Each structure stands twice: as structure tokens, then as C-alpha cells.
Length: 128
Image (cartoon, rainbow, N blue to C red; front, top):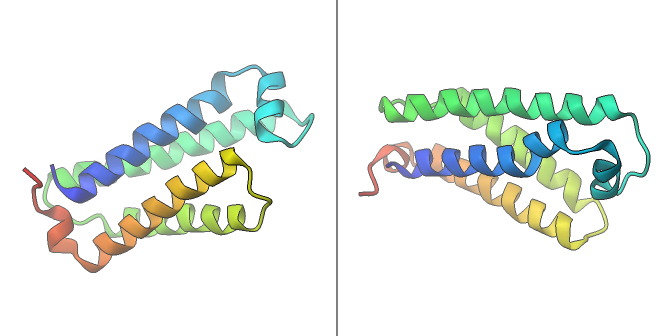
């Protein structure tokens, strides 16, 4: 498996488990507690979950490209904007344990995508 494939796989599984599925399946009361936003419009949680699924469809398409030996330029750019933007937004907030974990995950994905973009041959080369 190539380094970029592994990175995309981690992003897909991590986001699916920690964001998309909870936003789509957890009770609204629990989402209000987790988000630290207080009572909100339940539709916003579900729409955010759907948006995350849409991004994961893009990442999955990028993973397919990597397996075909192609560098997924647009998917990597999407990932840098998405994860980098979310990292910046989280840095502007008061840091809680939950936010620090999310920030570390998102920033790591961003750095990994930037490294892959600058070293495309390495990013596509098999690790084993």
C-alpha cells in the first residue's frame, strides 16, 4: 500500500467513525452535549453528517486513483483546504481535550497531504 493510500484510508475511516456516523445516528441531545454549542437545530447536525459523507466519497475516489497509480491532484487539494481550514478554525478556539485531538488529526492529515503533493512519486510508491 502506498503512503498516500494509507493516509486517505486513515482519513476515511477516522472521519466516518468520529464525525459522519455520529452526526447522522446519535440522538440530538447527545450531539448538543458533544458539540458544546448548546441546543441547536437538529437538521444542522444531519446536514453536516451528509456533507462529511460527500467528502468521504471524494476521498474514496482519490483512493481508487492511488490504487491505479495516479496522483489524485484535485482530491489532495480538496483535503488540504478541508483539513487545513478546519485546523485553522480549531486553533482559533479555546482548546479542550476533544478539540486538541481533532486539531492533531486534521493538522496531521493536512501536513501529510502537503508532503504527498510535493513528493508524488514517493506518495504513490508501495510501502511493502
